[in-house]
Image (cartoon, rainbow, N blue to C red; front, side):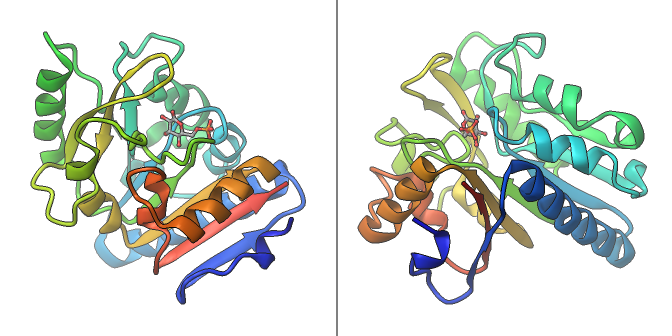
Length: 237
Ligand SMILES: O=C1O[C@H](COP(=O)(O)O)[C@@H](O)[C@H](O)[C@H]1O
């Protein structure tokens, strides 16, 4: 299947790349260009990225881009509720693969807090997010179950997190995979990004995307809540 065979709403652009490395290069150039534009327009830029395994190649190319990195704030769309030293930490992934070389000058706003419960941690993250300016560039990923950020199918709090009127910027979520406990940015904050991008790889995820577009069931496939304009989708087999 090719991504060009899928029917997207007006204003959703899908870009196909030959492989992971070409996707990473094109995505990094687009993100770097948008960060430069943001810095030219308001003096600083805010980039929110996803975790998981897929973004590593993109992070490495982006880290080498010629940018005034000290003017860039990097944060995360979601976090696994594990300390930053843990191998599953999304923040650790960003530190290891993005905040290197020239990009080491960027500031990182992490989401993780140690607390007595996941709910308490999410409240602390909510306070942290007071320091997050409007998002210039958002790079979402998507899991094979149709989750994006840590908006997991059928998780408690999902309805609230996907509501346009959600009063919280961060909510606790439960993933079906280990680590179960997650912190996610909620839909209104994510959807306010000036340049929202979605990066996915593989035939399997393309079929998940197709299903999400057809079913439009946000509870079963939360990614579907984001499949509307404006959105640029990057895909490779
Ligand atoms: O758990 C997560 O999964 C998704 C997808 O990850 P991937 O490695 O399959 O691309 C990711 O977007 C999210 O940030 C992460 O916490």
